[in-house]
Length: 106
Ligand code: F3S
Ligand code: F3S
Image (tube, rainbow, N blue to C red):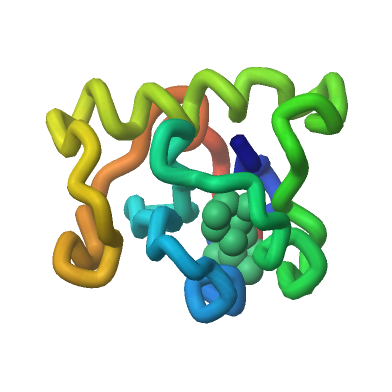
C-alpha cells in the first residue's frame, strides 16, 4: 500500500484524489488517508502531491513511520471498515493520533 504522511496535515491539497483509479483516498479532518486494503499500488498519487506526502509503505521516511499505522487505524477506529470508495463517504471530519494531537502545521 501507499501511505500519506505528515506533510499532508493542514494542507490537504487533494490532487491525489483525482489520480486514484480505485478511489481509496479518504478525507479525515486534517489530512487524507489511504485505505491499505483498497490501494492497488498503482503509484499514480505519489508524484502529484505538491508537498511529497505520499510514499510506498517500504519507503516511508523513518520520522513518519507512525503514519503507516495511522493510515490503517483511521479505518478501524472510525468504524469505516472498507467502504470501497471515498466519494460516497465524503469528509469524515475526524483524525487519529498522532495527527489529531499535532500543533497547526500550515
Ligand atoms: Fe495531502 Fe498531498 Fe493528497 S497534500 S491531500 S496527500 S495531494
Ligand atoms: Fe490509489 Fe495511490 Fe494506491 S493512486 S491505488 S492510493 S497508490
